Amino acid sequence: MPAVMSLLALASCQKDEGVLPVTSTDGQQLSVVLRVPSNAPQEGEYEPGSTYENHIDMSDDAYRIYFFTADDNTLIARFEAAEVVPVEGRNYVDYTLLGAVPDELVNHSDFKIVILANWPAYDDDALTIGTTTITDICNADWARFDFPLKSFELGPDNLIPFYGVHTYEEVTFKPNVATLLDEPITLLRAMAKVEVILETDDYFNLAFDWVRMNRYNQTGYCAPDADSEDDYDHNGVWADDYAGSLHLVTGSGTGTDLPFLKVSREEGAANATGDKTITEKWIAYLPEYDNKNAGDDYACIKAKFNMQVGNDEPHTIYFSNYTNGKTDNDAANRLDIERNNLYRFHVKCTGYNYKLTLSVIDWFGSFDNVFEYGDGQVVSPVAPWDDEHDNDYQF
Image (tube, rainbow, N blue to C red):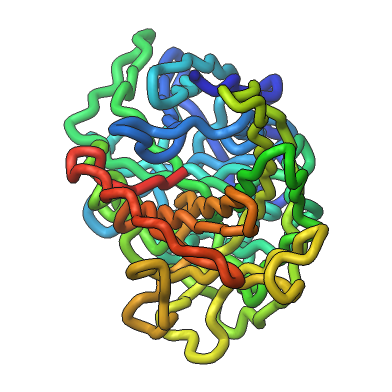
């Protein structure tokens, strides 16, 4: 089902001292389309994000749109929109922004547009027309966000940063005619989403006391290291989307014991034997993490049950590939935590011996692997998805 999108009413940016000067040519209007993908494929399609996972704050000077040259990526001008119109598609939402064409852009038929949205800060004073590059912005000190967020419960004042870039060619601006740039600019979230889903039945009424993230970066970049859409947008080719490399803040610092947020606990309909399935979901949003090269500082999840399961110690879920229900968690099997990706872990308790299985779905492949807590029997794994579904589960 398509996600319901939330967009605050657009307000024209306030011109503060130090903001880049923006002039416009009378009668020349521009229409720019931003596209927010509704996540990565599930059975061949993107998986919808929740309302605030797709939310762009267009009010109170909370975003930036810049024009850059197409050849050397240097700054041309800033664009300030006066109106926005959201349109929901099957796997995305398009936001059409309307405004005046800056004078500095008129003589450029080829250019790039860069979108920054939901960033904690912008430093217009640090930008110089003809000098500042896209890479300068992606790596700026003010292009960082501190982590953890205020909480994992997103809302109007607690949003995920977005970034997007797109190249336009052979554009002609005419007086008294609105120029429509209808090739959308795909926006990427700056964070990954992690879900831990407990599946049990009403006989046990099993639950998590808590779920915590052990080792994560305390600072992240709002943007990937991307000065072209080709760096992350590959027209739905799941094996290539999205950003192919990590963009990490040097000296970020490693945090531990970060609590997940419990978002739901639901009871399903009774089956033929009268048992009801109970599903409990916990979530976290994380900056990128170089897990493959982390050594002993590898990322993992700790989960504590509300009753004794095995030895009653917190159980560990690794960001790693599993084979026959086990992983040695060495560097070759580990998964990096990448922006705009969804990492989903299923923990199942079935039967009368607290047998638990873990299904790990990662960016590179979809695996219904089996993982055992305690002394339960390990069941056979389900076959991997076909390649046509391509196993990404980005968000």
